[in-house]
Image (tube, rainbow, N blue to C red; front, top):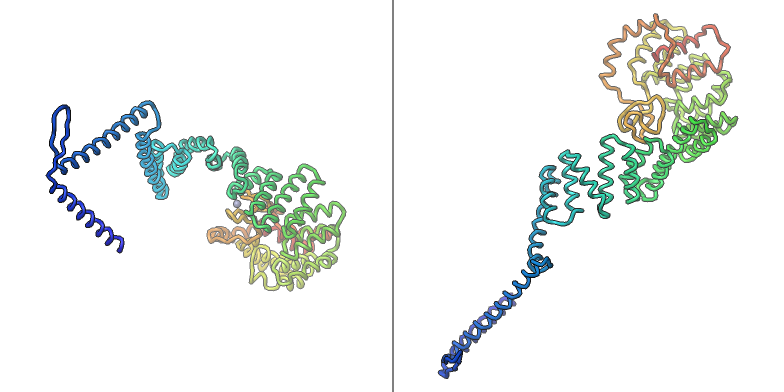
Length: 506
Ligand SMILES: [Zn+2]
C-alpha cells in the first residue's frame, strides 16, 4: 500500500521534472548547427534531443537485427541457438500438454485416447521413458496386446524403465498362461528390484506351482529380509515349503531327505497338521513311537484334527479297542467340549462296542451340529444297539443331505480337497488350504433331498462296500475296528455299524 503510494509520487515527480525540463529548454533560443554532407541544419534543443533518441533507438534495432541474422545462420548450420531453443520450448510445452492429457485419459479409463495422446507427446518430447509408460498402460487398457508387448520391449532397453518393461511382459505371460516364461521374467524383475513385494509374491506363487520348493524358499527369505512378510507368516510358509519338499523327496524314495524336511517343517510350525502327521508317520517308520506320540500331542494341543487321530492310532496298530481308548485319553482330555474330541471318543467307543458310552460321548452333537460324520455315527450307534432298520435309515437319510463337516478348503476359490496340498488343485494358489466347513448351498441340498427315497431304498439292495472318497469317519471307524480286532470274522453289531458308516459314504 505504502509502496504503491510511493510509486505514484515518484511517477508524478518524474513527469513534473520532464515538463519543467522541456519548458526550460524551449525557452533557449540558441540554435545548434549540424553539418551533414556539406549541408547545414539548424536545430532547436528539443529537436536535438528527439534526434538523439531516434538515433539511439536505430542503433539498438540494428544490433538486434544483426543478432537474429547470426542466430538464423547458425541454426541453418545445425547449431543449437536461440531460434531452435525457442521452437524446442514450444514443442516441449505441447508434448507435456499431450502427456498430461494422456494421463488424464488413463485415469478416466479411456485407453484409445491415452494411446493417441502418448503418441502425440512422443512426437514432441524426446522422453520415451515417460511417453512409453503412458502408451503401454493405454494399450493394456484398450486391450491392444501387440502394442503393449512392443512398448514393454522398448521399455526393457532403457536402464531407467527396464523393471517396468520386464514386469509388464511378465504380467502378459501370466495372463496368457505361459507360466514358465513368466517365472523367468519374474526372476529377472526381482534381480532388478529385490525388494518389490508384488514380484516376490508372484515369483513365490509360480515357483510353488512349478514345484520348485528350494527356489520358493529362497524367494520367501528375500521377502522376509525386505520386510514384506510378517515373521510368523514367513515361518508358516517356510514350513509349508519344507513339507512340500519332504513330500517330493518321499515320492522319489529319498527317506533321509524327507525325514529331515518333515522334521524341520514340524519344528517351524508345530500346528501345521499335515507336517505333524508326516513327521509322526516317519517317526513310526523309524521305530520311534515315543517321538511320534509327542509330535501328535503337540499339534493336537492347538487344534484337534482327525488326521492327527488317525496317525496317533497308527502308533499301535495291533492294540485292542479298550487299550486304544485308554491310550487316546491324553488327547481326549485336551479339548473336552470340542466337536472333534466328541466324535473321536464316540468312534473309539463304537470300536469297543460300548454303544451307550458312544452315545454319551457324542452328546447332543447330532442335534446341535449335525453333519455327515456325526449323523453317521448316530446311525452306527442305533445299529449297534439293535434299533429298527427304519430308525437307522432315518439317521442315514439325514446324513446324506447334511453338511460334510470340516474339509480342506481353498480360501481363494473354495475348492474342496480330499487331502491337504501346498498348492490348490483348482486355482493353483500357494498355501490357501484351511480346515473349514464348506458353506452349504441350497442348490446342493435340493438335489439329493429329492432323491432321498431312491437312495434310502437302494441302500438295502446294493450293499456296495467300495468307498471312493472315504474320509476320516469311515477310515477311522474301519481302521480302529479292523486293526483292533482282525480276528473278528462273524457279523457283530459293531461290524454292522461299520458297514452302515461305509454305506452312508456312498
Ligand atoms: Zn483354490
